[in-house]
Length: 289
Figure 1 (cartoon, helix red, strand yellow):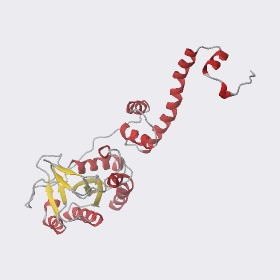
Figure 2 (cartoon, rainbow, N blue to C red):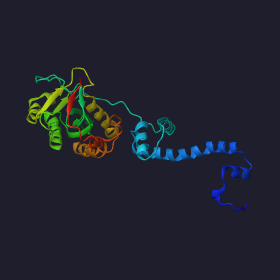
Figure 3 (cartoon, one colour):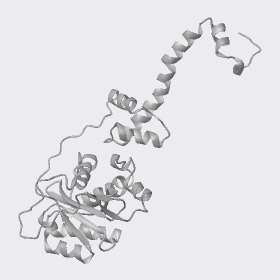
């Protein structure tokens, strides 16, 4: 067909007349095909994001899409991920006992309960977990800043002596340089945290000690949440040869993934590093009424 009109001069009415179809038929066809073509690109991007972040659910994938300029309804993301079997599956972890609270050291009150945080170095939380090695167990002690959930100190070894927790605390103090009198350190009632050497280190730097109540797992939930994330996103499925291998891999996960890349729903889908940068002005500590 030859015509004197350029492509830009064909409006919908003219094209429908030339094709011998009604406007209604044209729009019905468009509604059937165009959204499917647009979804193909979205589905491809979701697949790439999900495969690159195997433990992200649909909400974190949505946050990644928003960073790329996409405005997509969360129900659409959930539907696509469900259809493509991209929803993360998490196995229930086995958690052995790493806390020995039957000791003669002083147990201090819970100061963390009710704290309202508006900046870093106001509340640190600490915990210890276990790891499987090829022929033995290893133990990981961590210290997190409760405001940003950033890991500020950690240590890994094949023993549960107090020196393990002390090493993690010393790393945190060296890295963060907290102001004396402004920081609360919260942990469980384990002997590693209640012993004299650990208490003396806290006192030396003007850090107030705080411990969880008996039988209340929620008091130290942020530290335990990190341990759960570590087990699901780094440890699960890996076989560490020895403590050095575990130390190297877990250190890389903490420094290059968890602190700087992993999006946290509790942090408005920012990374701990981004959240600290966003709120770098806050330095006061308040108590809930």
